[in-house]
Image (cartoon, rainbow, N blue to C red):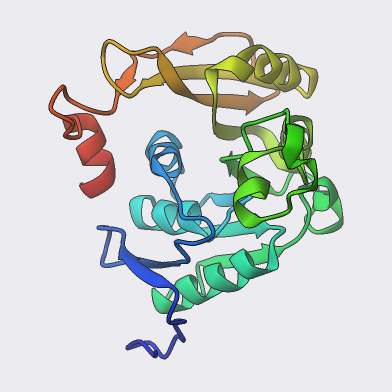
Length: 249
């Protein structure tokens, strides 16, 4: 199947509306589709006019596409190791007519210095694998397993890579799980990324947090702001006003 921009869409893929500037994204529902964590990260990250952004572990390119739609950043790069996801992300970029604004590179987060110059990005984002104990998944190299478990890269790899590629004063934004917070804080400071903002995400107001959003700044002074919690759903299961705005406004 061909689209109006002559981008091939496989029969097993779907094209989802991102509700931003008419942009769409190609996904394979049998492998891995973006989740609310990526959308919330795109709403949390600050990208100023003229800044260059790298998204580490970009998957099918959702975060660069959303950030291009929401901000006045100069250029956006997505780095992804899985060939199928890279190919799909590149087609989504072309589908939206963003080839001059977004690059999708195939590569390993552990090898970022062979791909990019030191201190070459103003902002780096990441929605990395959350689980550090693969257990029986150690030999599972399916796209979903790679996206969710630290099979091909670790939290340490992501933070070290970000620290090396950020300019002095550059900002690192990440979404992760609360149970990894101690590890995250330790690794950030070990790599001279000072935690500056922390926000807990709760599915419902009476539930424990299920995710965290964190901003860290390269070579910044110590000062951490814990923001008001972000509640995803109202009691009736609809999105709260804030989450609705992140998705649709």
